[in-house]
Image 1 (cartoon, rainbow, N blue to C red):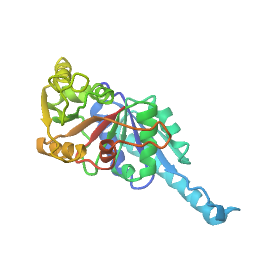
Image 2: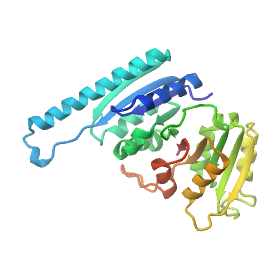
Image 3: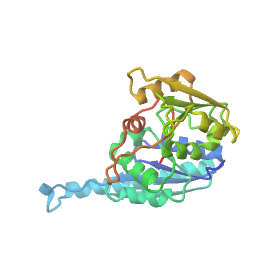
Length: 276
C-alpha cells in the first residue's frame, strides 16, 4: 500500500468512534497514524471588550477539552500498539487551514469522520488546507461505516478532467485491490476535447494496465443532478467507496465548491475519497 502515513483530524468532543476507525484503518494499512485534535476558538464580540471572565472561562474550558481529547488519543493509540503521534491546536479559524496544510504535507492520506464533517467551519478548514493547499487525498467517512482498507466495489466518478485523473492515481491501491471498479460518467460528451469517441475507454485502458477490473457505466441524468445520479448508482452497485475529484471555483480562502463536491462533502452513502 502507498498510504504509509495517515493524518486523522478530529474534534475534541465525542471523537472516540472516529478515532477508533482511524486506528483501524492505520492498522489494516500498516501505516503510521498522525492524530490532529482541533477546536476553533471563539473570539470575543465588540460588546465583550474589555473581555470578561465568562469569555475567558470558556476559553480555558475549551483548552482543557482539547488536551483531554489529545490524552485520550494517545491512550487509544498506545492500546492499539500502532506507530503514532498526536498534536493538538486550539486556534482561530483563519489559522487552521495553515496548520492542516503543514501537517498534511507529510501525510499520504487525510481522514475525517462524521462529527467533523458536521462542523462546517472545521471541515472547510481541513478541505482548504489538505486538498487545495497540500494537494493530499481526503477520505470522508460517513457515520457507522467500517473503516476498512479492503473495498470490493468502487465507483470512480469520471469526467475527463485533471481532478478526476489525480483522484484515480491517488486511489490506485484501493482500485487495484477491489473486485470491480465502475468508471461512471453522467451524460458523457463524446466530443474529442471532452470524453472522447468512447467515453471512459481511455481511463479504463489506463486502469487495466494497473490490474484494475474495470466496468464503464455511461449514465443519463434524466433531469436529475449529477450528485443524485452518483449516489443512487453507488447504492445500486453496492459500492464500498466513491472516488472523485474536488472541484472548486475560487482560490479565495473561502472556497466555493461545485454542486457535486459540496454534496459529497455534506453527505454520501459510503466513504468518499476526493483529490484535487
